[in-house]
Amino acid sequence: MDYRHEWKHEINYSDLIALRQRLRAVASPDIHSINGRYQIRSLYFDDPADTALREKRDGVSRREKFRIRYYNRDTSVIHLEKKSKLAGLGNKQTAVLTAAQAQAIADGRIDWMLGSGEALLQELYAKMRGRGLKPKTIVDYTREPFLYGPGNVRVTLDYDIRTGLSCTDFLNPDCVMIPAGDAPIILEVKWDGFLPDIIRDAVRLTGRRTSAFSKYAQCRIYG
Image (cartoon, rainbow, N blue to C red; front, side, top):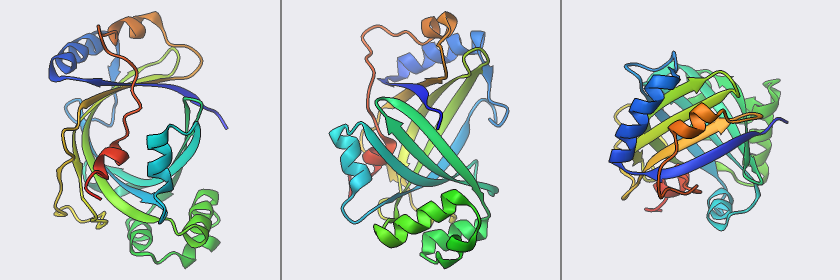
């Protein structure tokens, strides 16, 4: 399993404006973005003990979480994702879902997953059956993504984080979403073996330190 380096910083609107200008000068926009950004909707899973939430808040070095995600309200491309963290490094495994499959999982109709032939679906099935993993909440936000080839660098600016409270009607575009408290803007930097100096300089901000901010945890503040 390959892990990537990850930095997160909580920033303000002035930082966002400055970073946007710097990154536009040195990096490329993601080809999947629309006018330089896209909307992300994720459905996060947790068990009855809220293990994923507690391990994140407690800073457990080795942890994982499952989510289903799609972009720009386009349900023709949906992914099941497993995010794993180990000592500050990150790994993501993915599997493609149809809209019908995603809806079935959200509804708890999961027996078909065991015979799907997809290892990640089978793993989620086992944990839904064995640990009681189930959908917990929807997380929406806007992302501005930037790519830089050397180092396989991805820089993102995430904001307007919204929560569906206890709503798990994942494919319903009219599901009521509300601001997730006083959520900050989040700068994320991800890379493989090395972080080029040109990107390191572009994202440098005075007085900002790495953060362990979690959109999922932020969106669980109401329950």
